[in-house]
Amino acid sequence: MKVPGNWRAPVHAHTADYRAVVIKGLWAHWQMDGDEATKVELPPGSYWTQKANEMHDDACLSEMECVILLINDTPYETYFQK
Image (tube, rainbow, N blue to C red; front, side):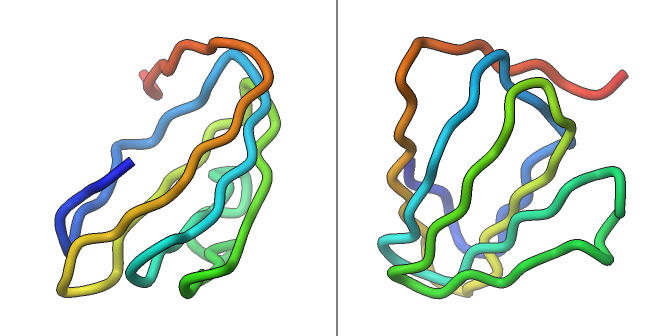
């Protein structure tokens, strides 16, 4: 997935687990149960896992674009916090 610099996703969840690797840029990922206190900054080469149906947020902290590789074993849908 490629996103522009200084991009932030809306709070969301997915219907399946996934793994992700940062390819380019500085990424941030955090769980909504801890708000931004759980935010982890992830430089290129870093990875994280995300459980299905857990609300979370993501952002590209770089001025330049961010590229991440998303890995999932099954197709999933994304849904947003109400």
